[in-house]
Image 1 (tube, rainbow, N blue to C red):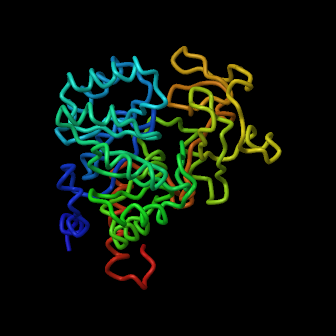
Image 2 (tube, rainbow, N blue to C red):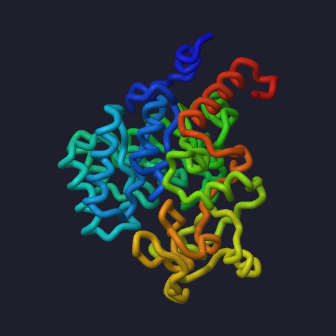
Length: 342
C-alpha cells in the first residue's frame, strides 16, 4: 500500500469539515504554533492552528499572511477569550475577520457571545473544553467541533478528567465531531481515539519538538529527554492568567522549590522578578511564558510545557515526519491490534 492510501485509511468526516486529509490537529500553542509550524503540519495533511493567545493584531496579521504565502491549506486561529483583555480580544477577532479567517479555536471558559459573533460571520468554531458541562455549553453556543482535553495535556489544563474518559462522556449525546486531546504523541493514541468513536486527535507536545516549532532548542531538548513521570501539574506559573489556572510542565527548580505545594498559588502574592528576555521584552518568574527561539536568560526556570505522553517523543524531527509516524503507527494499530506498532 502506498503512502497516499495509508492516509485515507484514517479519513473521518472531521477531515471533510475542516478541509484536511488527516484527523490530526496541531494544538494552537501560544508562541510555538506560528506560521512556520502551522504550514508544515497543513502541507503534511493535518489541520493547522496559529497560536495567537494575547498577541497583537499586527502580529496575527503577519502570521496569517506568512501562512497564506506558503500554502492555500485551511487553518484556524486560536485565541482565548477568558484570558485576554476584552478590547484586545475584539481587536484580534476583527483583524482575523477582516483578513477572511474562516475558522477559530477557543479554549478555557465558554463565552457564548464570542462564539456567536464569529458564527454570524460564517466561521467554523472548534472549542477545547476540560469538562462535560463546558462541552455541552460550547455545543449549545454553536461550536462545530468539540476538543475534549484531558488532564494529561501539556500547557494550560482546564479540567481534571483523563482525556479518554472525558471524550467518552462527551461523545454520549454530542451532535458534532469530537476530538481527543491530552498526552497523545504516537499513533496508538490516534488509533484509540478513532476506535472509541472520536473523529480525530489534537497534538501539542509531539509538534513542539519539531524543527519548525518556535519553542526554544532548550525546551525541545528537555522534552526529548523526559519520561512520563517528569511532568507536574501546578498553578505556580500563573502570572498573565486567571487565578487557579493550572499548567502541565516539566519539573524544574521552581516546581522542586515548592516542597510539594504545587497548587493554590495566588498571582497577586507572587513576586515579579525578571528572569529572561525575549526580543527586548522582560519575562517574569512564575509567568506563563515558555522560552521561544530568541529567548535569553534563565530558561530552566520558565514554564516548560509538556504532556504526559512526552516519553513518546524521542527526537526532534520535521513536523511532516512526526505526523507521518503518528499516521503509520495508527494504521498498524488498527490493522494489527495484537501487534506493537513500529
